[in-house]
Every structure is written in C-alpha cells, then in structure tokens.
Amino acid sequence: MVGMRWDAQRLDLDEPTTLPGMPSIRGLLRSVQVPEFPGLTFHEVRAKSALNHVPGESAMPFPYTINPYRGCSHQCVYCFARKTHEWLELDSGRDFDTQVVVKTNLVEVLRRELARPSWTREHVALGTNTDPYQRAEGRYTLMPGVIAALADSGTPFSILTKGTLLRRDVPLLVEAARQVPLGLGISMAIWDDELHAGLEPGVPSPRARLDLVKALADSGLPCGVFLAPVLPGLTDDVASLDSALAAIAAAGAHGVTVIPLHLRPGAREWFMDWLSREHPELVPRYQQLYARRAYVPAEYRTWLARRVAPLLAQHGLDRQSGGTARKAVDASGVPGDPEVGFPEGSLPTGGMPGVRPKAQLDPRTPVGEASACGEQLSLI
Ligand code: SF4
Image (cartoon, helix red, strand yellow):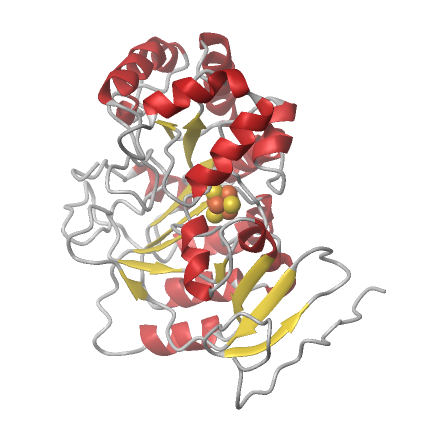
C-alpha cells in the first residue's frame, strides 16, 4: 500500500546500536523498508556534519564533498565505493546495493555550516562517493535543499551522477547557475542491454541518461560526460566507442572524458566474480591487466587513447574542435581516485579558488554564458 511504512526495526534512540543483528551505524534513528522501494532498507541517521573536507594532499580539484547517502541502489558491480560500506559493518556486495544510509537532517546541518563566518565558499562536490540521485532521493528529496543552500551561500558546486532523477531539479539548477558557478557530470559507458543489466542493474538506461544530457544542454546548463568505465575486451572496440561518442556529441555534452575500468579492492572481488560467470574467457586478460594495481597499465591507456583520438575529432569533441576531451590521452581514474580527468562542463570553472577565471562571473550572467566562461583546470 502506497505510503505504508514498515518499521518493525524501529530502534531505541538512546541505545541505537544495541539490537542484535543490526549494523552499528552512528546516529541511527531507525531503519525502514517501504513498499515503493522493494528490496531496499533505509537507515535514517542524524548526521553531525554535512561538509567533508578532502585531505590536502588529494589531487581532487575540490576541497569539500557532501554525501547524502551511503550505499547505492544503482548497484554497479564495478563501483569503487563498495569498500566504504565495510566501515559500517555492512558488506561491500549485496548490503552496499540494498542497505542505504540516509542523512535525514543533511540540509539543516549544511545550512548551519555554510552560515559560519569561517566558511570560505570553496568548491563542494556531490557524487564523489555514492550517487546523490540514486533511488533513495526519490523518497527523501534531500538534493533540492542542498542545491538551494549552496547557491544561497554563494558556494560553487558540482554534481556527478548516473541518476535521471536529476531532471526533477533542472529548474532549481538553472536558478542556482545564476547565483554560483556549477558543473554537472553524467557518467555512462555501457550501451549493450545485456551488459547494462548485468553490471549496473539499478542504473537508468543509457538512453535515459542521454536524454538527461540533452535536457541539461537544452536548459543551458553545463554538462560533461564521463565515458566510464570502458571495459577491456568488452566495450573498447572501435564500433562501440564510436557509437557512444556520436550519441554523446549529438546529445550536446560540453566535453567528454574517456576512462578505462579500474578495480579497487571491494569492487575487484565482485567484478571478477561476475566476469568468471559471464565471460570466463576474459579472466586471464583481466588478471594480467590488473595484476599490479587497480588501474590498467600505461600501455593500455596509450592504446585506448590512440583509438579514441580520431573518434573524438570526428565527433567534434576534441580540443581542436572546441571540446576538452584531452584526458582521453592519459585518463585513468574517476572521481575519488588520484589520477582523474574531468570533462568540460563537470566542474564549476569560472569561480574556482586558486584558478584564475577567464572572466569574472557576474551573478546576473545568463546561464548559457556562465557555462561558456569555464576553462580547464590546470590540475586535470
Ligand atoms: S552509481 Fe556510482 S555510486 Fe552508485 S553503484 Fe554505480 S558507481 Fe557506485
């Protein structure tokens, strides 16, 4: 029944971690399952803080992140955030996919933090750990409050997602882009239906994500696409890359970054399990490619870059054509990794601290012009 809540796991507020069999999650108020989201358990917590500081030595071009959710119902087998679920005493497999921690008081805490006189209005990134537009957002609607709070406080921000629920917030984002520089990144790389269903069963279809890119571009919002992860031996043939880049260019993406799969511990076990089941013939190749580290070797990256370069040019996505897909040449990571490339449109360039903008953004600048002000960061 719509609206009915199953809360048999309601917990005692004073002793939130004492029930046997329940994960020990700090600040846990209660755990709920609702009929609208079958198979998912939401662990509602009261967060103490909203803004996480990224360690100074990180190569990430953003000093702060916000993570409304932990765990992700998009269920990508290759997800690099899986390991973080173990900190909650949950496993990095099925639990990561189905046990989602929700910071229900996020917006309230965020507004408080942004109002501090010490807040320096540096770039805040969303979607660097788990997806802020995963299914839980349909129930908890945290992002509109986050976007409004950041914009109202004059804080530049970026959002990276695979979730087409972002469309709901397009009018808000258009409004926000009049107040602060922002960047939007959409990731998509698996176009084959069977692979998509096997590897990212909870993610909206590639077609739906292309429509999202188009909707963002049509609204005058910046939008960069991460063509990630490219899977060696499965999606790195010329025909697949060509049709993907053609579709991304046609949708109006401002830039593209092509990134091969990497396999960190946590994701590695789940991915290799899947590979052994579905493509056992590729197991030796992957074992060799990922023998020493989570990233593919330089030779593979160079090989992929050479393969991709003419396709980028052909579709007007290379630098010469006005695109900024240069990371196709040496890309190897995704946000959350030290070696990372960001496509144009995915970062709030124009107002980044430490980066001289091409033109100072006027808060009244129309959205289309604002996004055109961006320049590539020297970091990437
Ligand atoms: S959408 Fe992102 S965070 Fe969610 S499972 Fe997939 S890779 Fe992980």
